[in-house]
Every structure is written in C-alpha cells, then in structure tokens.
Image 1 (cartoon, rainbow, N blue to C red):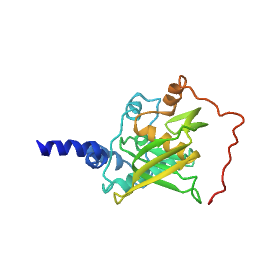
Image 2 (cartoon, helix red, strand yellow):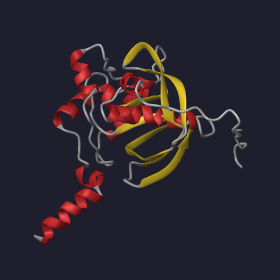
Image 3 (cartoon, rainbow, N blue to C red):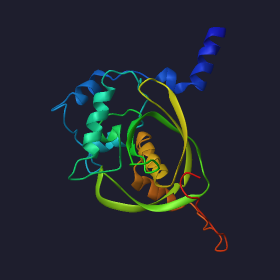
Image 4 (tube, rainbow, N blue to C red):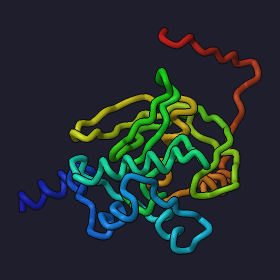
Length: 215
C-alpha cells in the first residue's frame, strides 16, 4: 500500500518525467516519411482529419528519443519554408502530438531559433498585450489576440536537463501561441474565448517605461 501511495505521489509531482515516452511506431513512420532531409507537411485546419490532430492534446516525449533530432530538423525546415516562413511551429502542426516546438528568440542577439522539449508555463503576468497573430496551419487568416506580456516557463533540452526562464513581449507571445498548440487550441479558438473575457486598459496617467537592454 505504501508503494502504491508513493507511486501516485510521484505521478502527481513529476508527471512529465514519468509520462515521457518514446515515439510510437505510427509516429516513427510519419517522421521517416518521404525525404527525411526535407520538410514535412503542415496540417491545415480546413481538413477534418488534420483538425482532429490539431485539436488533440499532446504528451511528453523522452528527450533522448533517437528520432527527436530528426523531427526537430524537419520541423525547422518546415517552419522556415521560404514560401511561407514562420517564427514558431509545434509538433502537432506536422502530425505529431508531442510536447515540443520551435520558437524564435527575439529577446536574444541574432534572434536565434530554439527547440524546446516538454515546455510548460509556470505563471502568467496579469499585464496583457494585444497583437496580431497568424498560423501556418490556418492560412490567410490573422486576428488580434490578448497574451500575457510576461510568463515564467520551463523546458528540457536533449540531455533531459530542465531550464527555467522569464520570457517577455513578442518572445512570450510566440511561446504562448505554440504552447496552445500542445493543448489542442488554435489562436482562432483563443480569440473566440476572449470575446467574453474582460480586459481593463491601464490608466492614462500611468507612465510605462522600458529600461535599455543589458541594464
């Protein structure tokens, strides 16, 4: 009985560690489909079959899964397609319901792209920003979305190590957009939900300032 209680407690405290697993055979086949040195097909919300994948909840993946680097590379190529480049892409958008995504770090010199494994949002700021968003899976559609200006996040790298960071502004927006994909939510769903969400503007007398980078 004590062992069972310990297992339940461990599952509650460390769900990502316990539930992480390797790719299923169907996922392996999809990753290996076609030219493995090329892009993958982007799932579209206009397809009923694609939408089932896009609206499904994703699960964690073992950081040391052998095919994960290949998936990451193919996702990056897909996101940076010169015909329709993006600033982020989540695994469900290429048919893999796993908790990984790419995002562009506009908060770092050179604006690099980073691949995050099993990311989580630990907390959201009450301060919101409103901005236009689009999505590779919803072509020719843009909309105004409210996102938290700052978020505290954590994610793993290929070694399994965890990183915790505070993200702000556009980088935080991209993270939230891709994180929504992992939960099966599209930005158009977020817009619909926000129609009935009150958002109060800041007082006009409130002076907001930004410190120079590096301070």
